[in-house]
Length: 368
Image 1: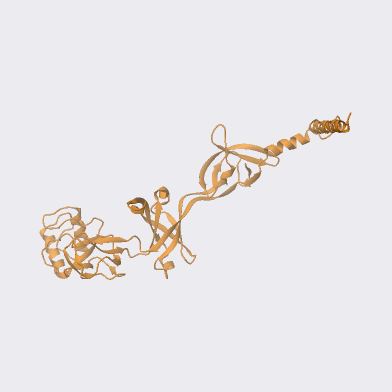
Image 2: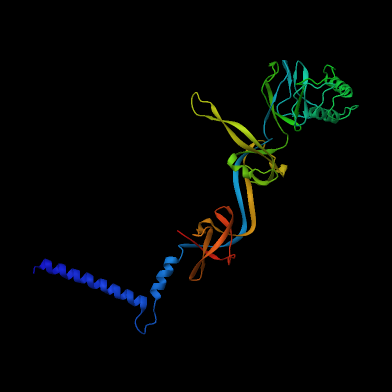
């Protein structure tokens, strides 16, 4: 027999012996020798290692909130455009940055004032004796608020209303016709702040022409949200506003509107696609905190929902159960068990849970 063949056989024998020793050692560890005290220890340890989670976390009791932060603009709220309805020449414009109240002039055409009144219904027709409607009542409410009398505030434009209008026209330096022509008045929710001019004094005035833009007079924060985030925009909901100096102030959602904005074009010759946005107006509780800021970028934190004093676990701790629903692996000393849970609010990487035996401080596994 050659030396090479002899060495090969010896090597095979050595491998076989080693395998046999390993098998014997495994049997001893699993079942123990007669009279031994360590029966089953290694197997139990191996089984425990197979079921033990790679990481754990504690069940906590806390307030869980679904929050989201968005960019906002501190200013005077949404900007509106005022459109002229008269023909002639622009002879006066309210100054940029000035405040115009009820009865004040926004601009003048041929030296005759276009007047601001308060109301939500736009002026859409000429008002004269015999006309009836909600717009009549809205106008008469303004006329009375300006100090004119002798008529009944209702939805009928009577001769008495016309007499009061003549007095009003005389005070404004307008022809005393007793009629309110379309384009002579402009309605807004309240007093306005002139933001910018769209024309200059001396320009020709045409019906449908934008004359100026305006805002409200209160300091407000405006935020544009995607439609998918509409759950955040609920009127009356409290928010937190982070100012440029790092200070945080409380606020409240005062108005929510759906607006259509012009999006970016798809390229040369392609029209811009319109986008639907949710415009949220936030009023700040402490107006003094805004001193020193005229217009600025801010951060607004919205809270869509909140659950106080609930048990929570990391979302990663949830296990999908074969019978449906979710469970968690409770680790108690050296033992583990699966506990079915009911889930509630998901937020900030954690989830609200309830289940038999779960309590604050309970240890749960985090699976791979």
